[in-house]
Length: 413
Image 1 (cartoon, one colour):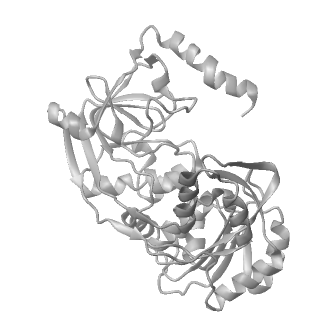
Image 2 (cartoon, one colour):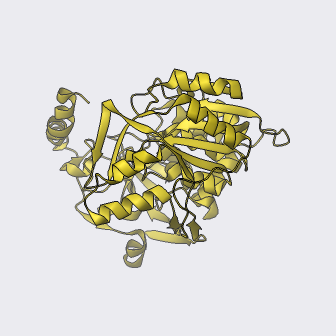
Image 3 (cartoon, helix red, strand yellow):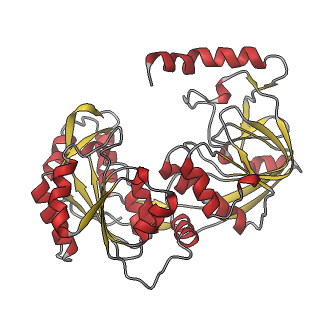
């Protein structure tokens, strides 16, 4: 974001919208509640609790340039940050995935992240995609006034999340809300969902939602419905989410055919977290039968089919790896990631739930145009480099099912 654009979004935009909406707009709510608390004090809200099983995630297998892990650990002075880094590296966790669905008569929703507001002007925090303290430039809760709400008859169900413009967050956070509505026995008349991006429109259509039933969610949209339906909103990948996405979006594909494709996902046209020697790595992988794919050039349906047919997926860390949710059990996955972003374990969790044969390959961080690491938080990001021949040999060992000794000792979760 340029300095001029950033200044407009963070400083001038709020002043502009406050001035425009001062006459005819409605005040921004300042109080917040939870769905359960609102149900306790109002007949306008009914909450359905949807418990799920809790599940422990075991440690993951880590290979590659493990010396970079030690170099990165040496940069972290704080013991708590160091411990967080170690936990992120292992990827072990305990997932708690109890959910709920709230039905609010006369409820309101605003913004493309889906901020839910009660009829008496309280934010329902646990079913909203934004909070008042979010520094998102378009956060409506930082303003004084919202646009006048548009009235919609019937029921409107929210299908969005905090960052719906990101493919991972859209698939793992927004779309699974449909499964919760189905489980609660709710059939909505309309869906409040962002449709600016092709992958949003395509995935909604694949799930059987007609475009005519979509209320476009935008940064300035404000809707009041006869009945507003919103589910709890969790960021983690869980078993019920991955099962829903896989089974619903791979319907019609030939499960009798054995996976055979060897897929190398390239980020050479992306703005960050690219393999700086992408061409050299692909040349080393090509004799092993790999084909290179730029996922941004494929439709959602084509990506689903590609990963459904994959026997092995090799890819740098990035939203495109979310597609391993469509892989069949036993597919081999090699994720390439920088030691600066090692605490992002979402793709390992998807692989665990889909019963995939997963390895994290640690790359060398490249100190050039896109590079940062904060020792205080033990997090950062960078572009990547791996030795092509060594990496190809490692992948060949995976393909041949030769046991790979983990560079990090596996510990009990």
